[in-house]
Length: 114
Image (cartoon, rainbow, N blue to C red; front, side, top):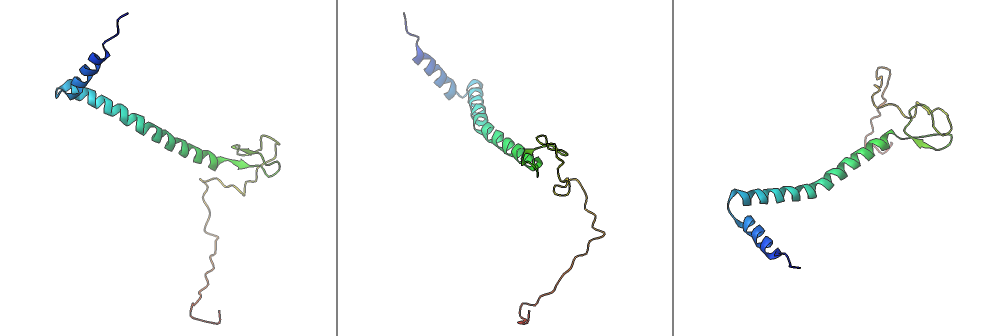
């Protein structure tokens, strides 16, 4: 059984990479693109996974009765009790500020009586 001339393929690939022609540039661009994808793809997947985890965590609710954590909005899937609506307001709700009074107290730092 005759051995394949691997050194010949290695020299041919090296000549193709060192050649200033369009074929050498194409191979270098192809290798650079593959390397860029292999380095950047795990970082992009990690960032997308982190963002998805943050969205899921924001939507999770804990049941006051049994402690079960779910993404349901109205009722606990484990015990059937209703979630408290006043604790977790929807992020899209607008707060009516026309009836709100803000009390401000002025405090002087140099005044020893306060």
